Length: 286
Ligand code: SF4
Image 1 (cartoon, rainbow, N blue to C red):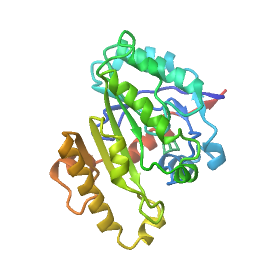
Image 2: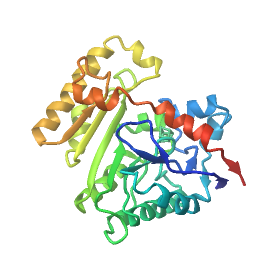
Image 3: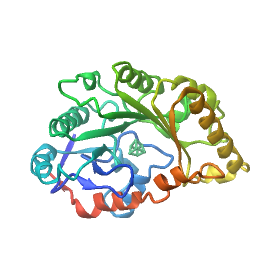
Image 4: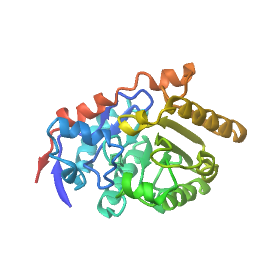
């Protein structure tokens, strides 16, 4: 795998609920075609040339050395570190990335910093080792379908859905906090599917985040998309209420946003996160 070096790694996120973030890889072999907002921004800023370039991840080879310098300076300010916004920390079939991610989580946890980790890959079982990894960490998968054909088109390099769920369930069974990001949820003209069926596979999680698909012309082609997303949001809320599962319906998904989700999601400025990665952390190929 190609290596790059960076000058800094930990950065204060523009996303209200995430606090600090780390993106220790440039690019992502999952190659999502929703499209991937991180890829679009990196392309726009000239960091990558095209999709082919994006799906060849480059690992930040000096990540642990940077953390040794940054953690003592920042650890009193950091509440939680999120991995990752502009790449995937447990990229499927990329063991080098998974090994580095585990070392990063271990280093942060040993300094009293907890992590939230979101992936379309598979969580390694080692994360259940309480001697190495904090029990305060939170682990999440992104899951918007159970349809293999849909995955092969829209998330071609990501882990199979059932393997994502299995790895998350394993961590749940070990007593760790787990959640699922059901975003960007597709409209029926992209994949006809039952939301209830998907939710039933995820009834063990502590939290569900649900959000609509943006930046895709197919969604606006689906005439009743506002009504569709409103009904989906109601289904998620009812499902969670019945099972005492926490939920967030992302801003703009339901017809009427409640004040709590408005506060959490309305001010989200992911562009700031992407800009930071692009501008303030110049990458050097080595
Ligand atoms: S997993 Fe995330 S970062 Fe990777 S291609 Fe898909 S949307 Fe982009």
